Figure 1 (tube, helix red, strand yellow):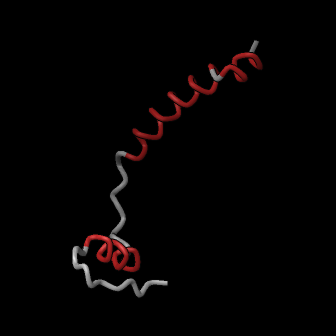
Figure 2 (cartoon, helix red, strand yellow):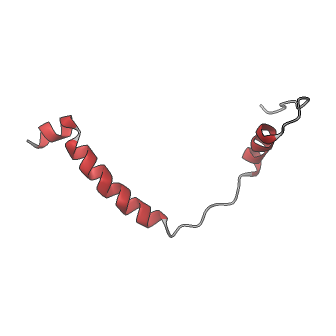
Figure 3 (cartoon, helix red, strand yellow):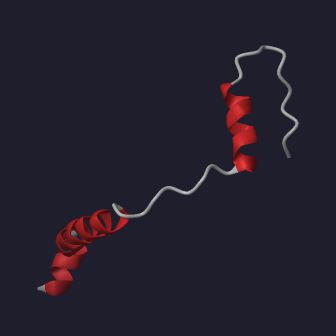
Length: 58
């Protein structure tokens, strides 16, 4: 029966709901990390509306 539930996705759905509730309550107390300065260069490039911008990233 357990294997049938696993194959049908019933077991996975029940455990993923329980896991999601547990993890969301656990992550609620964690502060976000500061922005990554290297990723910030790409974000700034993507946000730039200039038609003359040049991507110098690797």
